[in-house]
Image (cartoon, rainbow, N blue to C red):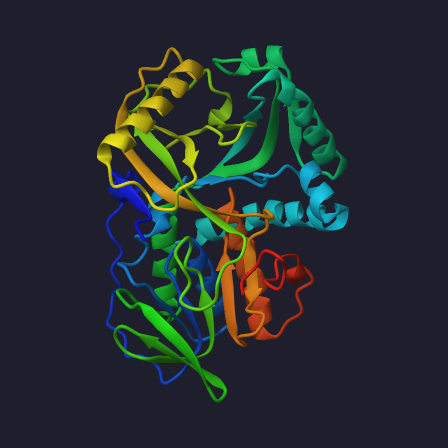
Length: 404
């Protein structure tokens, strides 16, 4: 599957990650993880720090899948607002879901600070503005709900927006405790940490099939077989080697990264920007003064091969960005398209396969993939090490939209 195409920005900010050594595979691993992106590396870190023998396999060069095109926006708010999620799954579960996302922000910061390289983790507020006047009530309802359950946020009217931003809208929800990150540096930093912890890294190793072999799993690859007590699929938006996703919607989106902008003094704390309409526009800054602008989601799973189409779509995004920031001299330096996944019920897929024992999944589909990966790594660590996790049932796969 072609999961991204065009001129990616994040790979220009760092060098490719290459394992420091060639590993002799173990006779058996405690866990083999399929996928070396954010989900796979965060999960490997949680397991390795618990003392387990872990290997990561990836059919590509390490960390060259979706992490290379990740937006790097980290937010505790979800694509489905809390007051809407309460109506869908009930108050207790919906609030706990949001609490887990909020707690995951601190966990991501903790990990970012202990990595051997700088990964550009910076705390930012988020501004979700009402795309039209009819959405103001929706914004206000979400503000009331978040405040009621103790989540830090504000509501801005037109005048407050005009004071703090170079544009104004009918209203906006401002959430606090969010962040931006360089997702590719983040993965590279974790991979370096994993090598220190003794995790084996196998690039260009594609899992073909998995068979039960007494109390272990026989993992057949395009290179050499591996044996493990358990396997975790963190394959992102690609088809999993085992199991079928039910209720997964794979789409594609467009983004561009601008030239360097001189300064952002009129932009409140360089907040992460998004909006209420779907698909939504999002805008953030990068540490070198660029804008990262994305949106225009399309109901097609693969990134387009056409550079002309990517250019057309990103020119559209450029015009939207200029409408919000008319005084900025914004130009397109990098333009690309990438696949992304959503679950129909707005809940990521985390847990053990309903019928295939010792085969687990962490598919963080949704607007908060990195946040979901963080909380999911804790859940899987508990499930695999035999500890009770009170939150695992929220994300289990034996549901209407899960993995079969």
